[in-house]
Image (cartoon, rainbow, N blue to C red; front, side):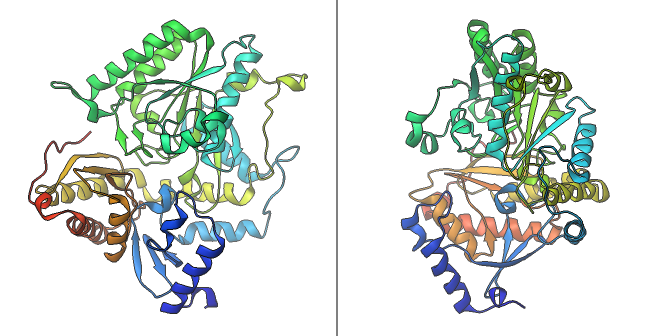
Length: 461
């Protein structure tokens, strides 16, 4: 075994110290690294991550929502080893290769060829940037260059590069760079937790869509696209909404001649119960962004799918009418190979059907365990389960994260929202371990008076 994966307590401390000294960790305030040292992972097996001391942690976040079929999956490993002996990378400008072609073909087929062309990128924020640029450029090529603005949902998240921040409504990310950003129109989120007395999730969706309609009726001539996270706004607290909202937005975009961008970076690839979240509403967007799980959590890969008619609007001898975006690793052969192996696993393991049973078991056990806990809004969409902790107290997310680690779980609450998004290969015993550990962690970080309060307003979205 290589020295870097040898199990010893001193190795854990050594890697933590070296990481603090030289690695700039994302979404982390460096001053807190002493109190919350980075977890040094030596290897992964299935749903488990293992540190240098041999301690195992159930990966309840799928390593930031990317790992679909577990760590070190033999089928993906084998596919990548074969690909390494053939082609690791070649530029996609003026060249092509089988993994990029086959992946685009298979994804197009999964949309019934409604979205027939794929443009490759490396990460989710890049995919959003590409979709925004494509939308504006498509309208310009159509002689409608006045359509320069975008509409996003309140509390939406689409990435942290400048273009993606333009349509992200998360103050901690956006405010620091506000002088560099253009302003997008913001409209109501259809978050089902916003239901008024007598409303259900569908009514909230209709109310939010009415606000969007008022904006489009007034300003559609200057609006290029509406961007949404279908079914779940993940990064701001797993806000779930009714599929009716997507149907209404699709109809409004058609009526007012505005593109619809579906950011399925977090919610695509089966997370919501269907391969594409938009399928549950029976609609297709004009642009669909995928990343995170598309490579099974192995390699950076993102893509934007779009309609053939939009692609054809860029076909011209004039270079200014072509889509002007590129990066060196576009369509990387290894990343596309990992994605093809991941698609194979969906078919071979009947993952979407099996996930329904896993999700039912998980939320059933959680619902029973949370009955007398200080939580609200237990909700689930596919393999995403979440609840909100009432009166969480200072540094709740940090305290919960550390307590979860002590219970053998890797979890990162979002504010006061605790979510579970494990790999699809999680078994029944591991679900029990995840739920028991989550409940024990919640009990450990809740004050005694809160622990006896009992839950209220616990319902599925």
